[in-house]
Length: 371
Image (cartoon, rainbow, N blue to C red; front, side, top):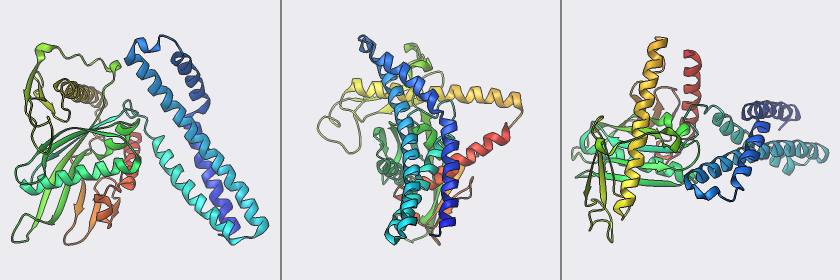
């Protein structure tokens, strides 16, 4: 790598990092950390477990942000020192090390830069993801199960803890629906760009004539509710049914009436959970899902009012957002951002970071244009 090139690259990375530091506002975060640490050290903190968890979660999030930004600053400074060493020694191995670290820094800064674009009201929340088969019969059910694996693999690649609440299996193959929670900060802000209808074109493995089939599956992404959301659900507005879990299972999962289904009568929303052995645990999980759905209903109603006031419909994404073609050619294309790749096997194995990054940048641009 030529010296002018590396100097220009380092200047570019410095500009990106400085911009991130300005948005993240480390001094403000340090003030917040000091305040939360004072609360966390209170002897009666855990008398109110919900409040204690909120304090410790926010503290961990802020500390993580500071460590991440300061760590990148140290790495960028170290690269500058490494460049000076490479120039002094004119050593190919050192220049190779510089090139490798610059590439890694560029990727890390790009990811963090995207994170700074997540400024929505609920973006910092954990995510509740539901996948449903739509048009396409058994192929659609199989496609929904493929999408479930895609997102679980994506979370696994990032080391994100996931809890599957409910899976409804189709009769022949695949799933009718599945709901899972992604339990990391900013999961909602990141994954919300995946919401919409996903279209698959392939030779159907269920057609004995080997014909091409188009099938659809829908992805819904909701923010997980917190105590501050005040989603009150009177007992008179819900109906709770218990039933025996279905699908793969073992021990007491399929032998007792532990699964729970909750219907919210005013809205018609129905949720269920059968992941846990305990009926009490399944009921608590189902209530969390219902609260998130009702929070989303409230958010959409508020957004509709704002759109009506602004007379602006630019925020509509439409329903179909990504196309996955496996035959007669190999291509995955996002219909909003136009980002595409021919490496379909990698995408189906959860490598969707570039799609998500493009989606977050596109959403930010749409919001800026509509402002």
